[in-house]
Structures are given as C-alpha cells and as structure tokens.
Amino acid sequence: MIDLKLLRDEPDRVRASQRARGEDPKLVDAVLAADERRRAAVTRYDALRAEQKTLGKQVAAAGRAGLAGATGGGADDDRQALLARAKDLAAEVKAAETEQSEADDALRDAQLALSNVVEAGVPEGGEDDYVVLHEVGKPRDFDFTPRDHVELGEILGAIDTTRAAKVSGARFYYLTGVGALLELALVNLAMKQAVDAGFTPMLPPALVKPPAMEGTGFLGQAAENVFRLEADDFYLVGTAEVPLAAYHMDEIIDANRLPLRYAGFSPCFRREAGSYGKDTKGIIRVHQFDKVEMFSFTTPENAADEHQRLLAWERQFLDALEVPYRVIDVASGDLGSSAARKYDCEAWIPTQGKYREVTSTSNCTEFQARRLNIRLRTADGVRPLATLNGTLVAIPRTIVAILENHQQEDGSVTVPAALRPFLGRDVLEPVDR
Image (cartoon, rainbow, N blue to C red):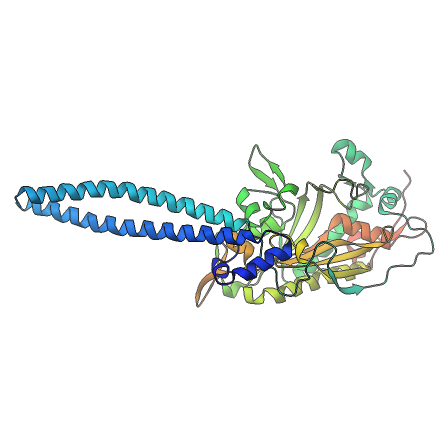
C-alpha cells in the first residue's frame, strides 16, 4: 500500500511508476478521489459529533432548569425543540458514521489496486528488457552430448514424473533415492548458511488466512496463480514470503531490534496459470515444490543496502554449487506488485542453451508493511518499516542446474564440494532399474 502523503504530494511520480509497470495511471486519480471523499466524510462526521455534544449539554442544562422550578411555556417549548433536534441529529450522526465507514473501505480498496512505486534506476519495459549486471562462471564445453535433467533423473533413480502424473496429474513429481537426499542436502546447506549469517530459522505454516495473502500483495495481479481452499477460506502459499511477512502483522517493533531476519523452509504451491505449453517436461515449472526463503524487516533508510546483502547471500549459495549463473536487474513491467526493485539470479541450463531463474530478491519498501500494519518505533514516533525477501534455494530448478552442469558421460553426476558433507557422497551414480 502506498503512502497517502506521497500520493497527495507527488501524484505524477506514482502515475509514472504505473506507466512503467504497464498498469493504469488512472488508478492514482481513483485513489485521490477516494481520499477526498473520505476526508469530506470525516469532516462532516466530526462536525455533527461536535454539534451533538454541544446539544447534549444544552438539553442537560434545560432539564436542570426545569427541576429547579423554572416556569413558563417558552422554556418548556425550548427544551422540547432541543430534544427534537437531538433526535434528528442522532440520525444524521449515524448516517455520517456509515458514510465515513464506506469511504474508509472505498479508499482502502482503491489503494490496494495500486502497485508499489518503482525504484529509480529500474530498467523500463517487459520481461525481456532486463539488464545483465553480472555473469559468473563459464558455461561448460561438453565433449559429449549432455543429457537433460529428466533423463539424468531416470538414470540416477532421482526423479519420477510418470508416477506423479498418475497420482496427482501434470506438473507434479517425486524425488526418490538420491533425489530426495539431494533436496535435504540443499536445504541443510542453505539453512547453515542462513544461520551463520544471523537469520532465525523458521518452519512456517503453508496455509494462511486472506489478510496475510492480501497483505503481501498476492491477491491482485498474482491471484490467478494462488490455490484457495474455499470451504475453509484458506490459501496455500506460493512462497514462505507470505507467512514470514505476516509473522509480525499488527505489531510495533522497536527500531533497535532491526533488522529482523528469518529463513523459512516451506512447501510452495502455484497454479501456473498462463503457462500452458511451457516447461511441460520435467521439474522446472511445477505446482508444488520446496524452498528456503530469506525475509528481512528493516528501516526504510536501510532497505536498499539490505537488498544488496540478500543478493550477496544468494550469490554465495550459487557460488558454492559451482554452476554458471548471471544476475539481472528485472524490468519494471516484470516486477510483481509488491516489489520496488527485483534482482534475479539465473543458472545456466546446458540442454536448453540459456539461463533460467533459480532465485530472486525483492525490495518491497514500506508497501507490504502498510498493508499488514507492521510499524517500527523510534525516538521520533511510530511509522511503517520496510520488508525484503530473497530466495536462498528453490529446490527443483536448483536440482536441474546441478544435474545438468555436473553430469558425466556415463550419466553420473559429480556432487559440488559444498554439498558433500550433507549428502555423504562425492558422486551420484546411475542405478539399475
């Protein structure tokens, strides 16, 4: 949710941000109009309440005068007139209160339709208009024809999509044998790195109530990819970002406790709406997967620096896996509603001959905190804080990158040195089926 003061003072900046995202700048005018209506409703309600209080005192004074023996039809008539006005005024106050409540709701709805303000310097454009910031490692020059991760998964007894389709349908998978062990090794390596960096490890719920999903910005443009359990009014999270962001919902945090950093391991569920025909083979684009997500609460002034730290931790993890990757500055039209800026790390996938996203990190500034009512307390008062998120490891795509980049001609896969203590082996060997 965007600060109303910013909308009032710099509406053109917010309109420009909307245009950069490819979204409707007229939504800014809708918010400003709703804000004017609300302020007028508040003014009317306050004025009527003030009159009601004054009239109450007059009625009370007239009653005391009557008890004291005041006589005369005029005094009694005045008191009756006051009582009649009080009755009419009570109805007006009730109507004004309803009008104010409706204006509050309309303003919030209008604000929720607006995406976060894009950070200065973000490249403009759509999905293909990113800027490459770093390239790390060189794609391997194979002296044999490399196998894709599906074939390698079958040879190693690590991935089974055929039986998953029988049990659950398309875009599901089993990790079996060394595949399951590889996931556990990746999670343990990620959690060790996160704890060493000062993160608190978390196992958050995967089902959340609507305010948590709405507050993090996943019921707007991203709603089509969210699974909802209508009978119980729960949502399945698509990322641990949601329960981690909502962890401090409706709280005030002392500034001296910041930054607060959490690393959450959770299952993630995505409908993958709009991806018909894309990545139908294997485990690159699936409905359910596991992930370790970093999440930070910090001051707005420190948010940009914290963003760089999250990106550095993501790069540290990819460096340990010894796969070529690049870092891109995501263009404004591909940010997602909550992010003011986002960096993606993309690993090289040899059989596709291109880089594919494996992690990302977003600076959401105060946007989510305002929606979730999370504030910080300083010596100068209480105000919203900033939230940031970053994926440390998304299991399926990371497994794809490891298998394809570290494969050998016989179908075996060399295990990156950093994973060996957690996996208990140096090489993943083919199995007899």
